[in-house]
Length: 156
Image: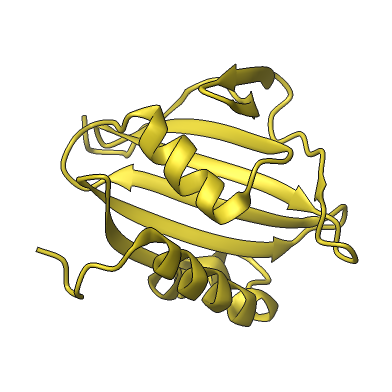
């Protein structure tokens, strides 16, 4: 059961993008990002799937990087149409998307990113991983980085 009443995805997107913009000036280091994560994360129900969503905006030298991280609360992985079609596109739109996938503690974490020009807000090409490959699935074009497994010391 979620802590807050269920809302439509578009309402989560509006509230989370607003919060990320407010917090952007305070995200100067990974430590800052860790401290602010509680304010940038939510649980939601999207097409019957209980998901945890984290949305962040950070200034990089070459662009402003928008990222949305999605993981299932209940199962090891999510169908593409939930994390790609519904959530990533709701937050980021369609242009210049990049996807990195990680196995963390037996669950898949999907990290969708998009670089945007600071002046115009238009999507700009970014290279998040040197081995990223262009992909297209179900009408979504994106770069896909190789799957990464994150090992937590002391845990299987």
